[in-house]
Length: 305
Image (cartoon, rainbow, N blue to C red; front, side, top):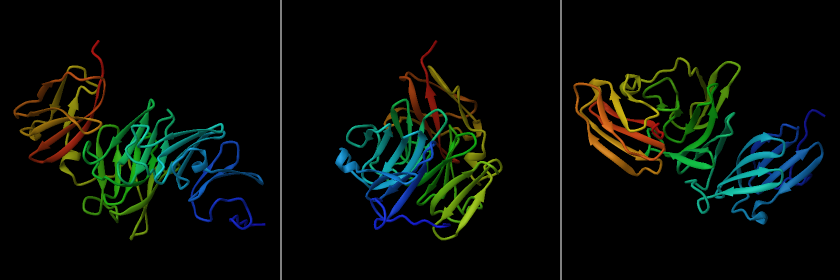
C-alpha cells in the first residue's frame, strides 16, 4: 500500500500526538510522542516510558540519532536524555549544568558536541561533558528563547527564535536577522533547516510562510557586525587587545559562561587598546559597550606556555 497509518488504536504507539522523528542508522524509526518514545523496526515496536525509568517527563520534543540504538532526546520539562544501547542518562536542572528543563531542538556535530534550542535559556552547547548556556545576559545572543537549531556546512549553529528571527553563531560572534535589518520576512520563527545540497538555510515563520537564505552572502545592516572590531589574540593567555580604534572609548566587561563579571575596564581611544588578564582556562565573553552600540565576542583562555 502507498499509505500506512499508525495510531494508538492499531499499534503500541504511546500517543497520537507525534512531535519528533529520527532515523536509526540501522534502519528503525524513532518516534517521539507526548507520552513517551517508540522505536519501530520493520513491524516490531519497542516503547520507552521514561517516567517509569526514573525520568521526569515522557513528553518528547526533539530527537538526534548518532549510531545504532544511540540517540539524544529533548524533553518538555524533563531536560535532555541520552539513550545508548538501552542505557539511559538524564541531564536536568537538578543534576547537571544545563539551564533549561525543556529542550526543543538538538543538532549534533561530527565531534559529538551538541547545540540545543531551549525556550527559557536560548542556546545550549554541550562539550566535553559540560554545558555552556548562551543567552542575552551572558553573550551576544540577542534572544532568550529558541525553538529549533540546525548546523551549516561549517558545523556552525543557526537558530530559529521566538522573537529575534534567525540567530547565527559563527564561533566568535552572534548575529540575528529580522525584517528590520535583512530580507528575513518575519521575526517570529518556528523551524530551521540546512540544505546541504544547495548550501541554503531554510526557515519556517509564524506569519510569513517559508523562506531561504544563502549564508555565504547574507548581510545585516548592523554597523558593529560589519566593522573590523575584534579581540585578539584569541585564544588568549595573559592579555587581550581590542582592535578597531573608531569604536573605542567605551566600557569592556568580561564575563564567564554563567554571566558573572570577572573583570571590567574603561577603554581609551587612539590606538588598539590592551588589557592584562589572569583567568582560568575556559570560555569567556568580552562585552563591549561602545558609542556605536553593543557587541559581545567569545574569548577562549588557555594556559600560558
